[in-house]
Length: 446
Image (tube, rainbow, N blue to C red; front, side):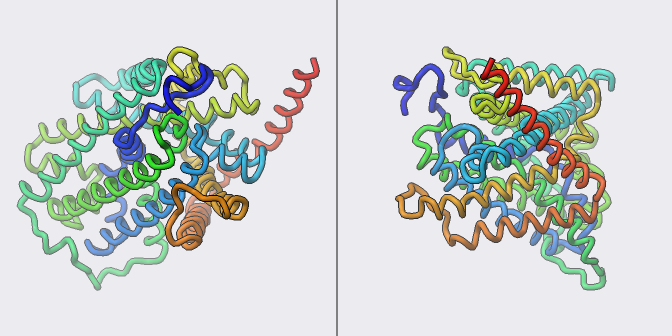
C-alpha cells in the first residue's frame, strides 16, 4: 500500500526498517538498564551468573520477538495484540486486553516514565523538585503535539532520541571498559562460597525480563510500516538483537568498573560509574542520558498505545470518535489526545505508580496469550504461504508462553497484593464489556 493509494481513513505506510528498529530499541530501553543491574547483582552470587541471566533473558525475549514477527507479517495492521486476540479468541479477550493496557497500563507507564524523565531533567538543569510534575506534563504535551502531525514526525522524534540513548549507553561502555581501569577477571567469576536461594534467583529473573519488556510497540504500529511482511521481521529482530548486545555489554562495564559487590551495593550504578571518573559532573552527564532515554520511551509508548486505542474505537469497543484517523495527517489525533490527557491526569493525581504495579501481570498475560494466538493462526491458515515463519515452531512460542506464565506465577507468589489487584482489574473488565455492548446496542437501536 502506497501513500497515494491509501484512503483518507487509513494509516500511511511510512516507517522503514531503520525507523522500525529504532522503535523496538526505544520501546525496550528506558531507564531500566541504568538501574536494574544493581538489583540483579544483589540477588546473584557473582559475575558469571549475572551475565547468564541477562543473556538468557535476551534469548527468551528474542523468541517472543520472532513470534511477534510472524504475527505482524500475517496481520500487518495497527492494534498489535488486541488485533490478534480479537481474531483468534473473540471480542471479550481482546476487550480485556485493551481495557487493561490501552486504558490503564499504557497511560500509567507513560506517566511513570515521564516523571522519571522530569526527575533526571530537573537534576541535570538544577530545577527544584516542585518542577518535576509540570516538566513531566509538558513532555507529554509536547510528544502528543508532535505525533498529531503523523507517523513521519513521530518517527523523527523517536529516531533522534534513540540515537541519544544509544550514545548514553556507549558513554557508559567507554567509562566502564576503558577509563575505569577495573579488572576483567571478575566478569566471569563464580563465587562458590555464596549460596543463592531459589527465591533470590526468581527475584533476579523478574527484573531482567521486565527490563526487556516493550518490544511489542512496533506491532501496535504495523499499519504504518512499509512492505510489512519483510520489514517487520527484520526490524524486530535487528532491534532486539541490538538491545541484547547493549544490555550484556552494559553489565560487563558495570562489573569491570564497579565490581560485583560494588554493583550490588549501588542504588544508581550508571551514575556511580560515571561519578567514579568524572565526579559530580559525571552524574550530571548520566542524568542527561537517562532523561533522553526515558523521553524517547514516552514518545513510543504514546504512539503505540494510541494506535491500540484507535483500533478499539474503530471496532466499537470504545467511543467511535477515538477510532477516527485524521484525513490530512493520517494520525489518530483523538486517541493521542485522550491517552496524553489521561496520562497527565495520572501525573497530577500521583496515582500512576499503583496502576503500573497493578497491571504488570496483565501486561505479561497479554504477551502470553498474544503469542499463543500463533498456534491458532497456524491451525487455521497453516496451508497458506506466509512471508515469514518463526523458526523452531512450535518450540519457541511454547517456551515463551510457558516461561512467561511461570514468571507470572512467581510474581503472584512474591507480590500477591499487586498481582491480585492486576487480576481484579482484568476481571472488572467483564462487566464493563457487558455494559458497553448493551449501551452500544441501545444507541444503535435509537
